[in-house]
Length: 353
Image 1 (cartoon, rainbow, N blue to C red):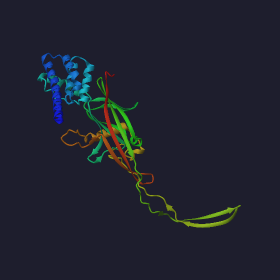
Image 2: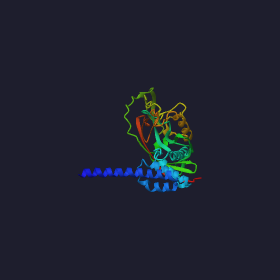
Image 3: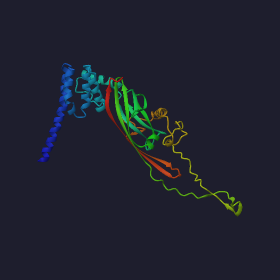
Image 4: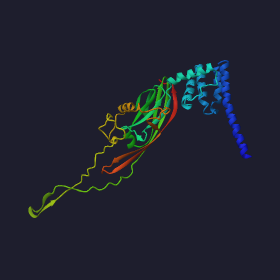
């Protein structure tokens, strides 16, 4: 009996939720078709917004933005258009519950915003092609996929690391791998995107963990024998020679013939910047030039996830890397790097200069 009552309760709750979802759409459709009272539309949708299902919220946010735009209420229009893109991810239903003319009006309104709103659909790390990791020499690339052109500023604390203009599509931010791996830990970056008088802010957390196991044992080399050397030892006391001895020895060469470390740090095209510096742990790079180069290298490889063909380059939020190395004694070592990227939206700014 208890199970039956629970089932009935869940069924009633589902029907109630479905009824509420249908009710607000019916109310909006009726208000649009009768008198186009946009204030009344906003007043009908606004109180119900927080109680709506996640799937209903993009439609509601778009209708609120449209209604406030028709009232020339720019702050509220901006608030709800940001909600439509950032929370609803612009995944509306097509507004099929409205009549054709009102449906066309709202879709046309949103299309204008979609052409100018800098919607970021992805912030991710570049893994590679298949199982082959791509870490261009000295550079840790971060991909930012944005829907429209926008000016950007990328900062760490008070320091502006990069600034410029993002183009529609994927863009690349570059971090110095040497600095990240030599000084692991958590860093919080700020990415600001400016389009018109709207500035969107994204907080990007990057956790870097580096571990280096103990050196792997290396077979002891056989001592190389050099050319015999003859020498004599003499002892004088008070200016008088009291003892002399002649010796012949063959010295041992301590050169282990350890090969030069040729670690290329992942992908290293022939024309790559600083290609004569194979170890980024000991070299800094020009991030601006490096980002320009890596953008050109990746643009023909990176494909959208929703393309019919699988993406040629994988982009991920968590990345694990293993790099073989040589220690000062020539012994084999491995450096393991784990990187975790997370991003979130911060409050936007309106009427920015």
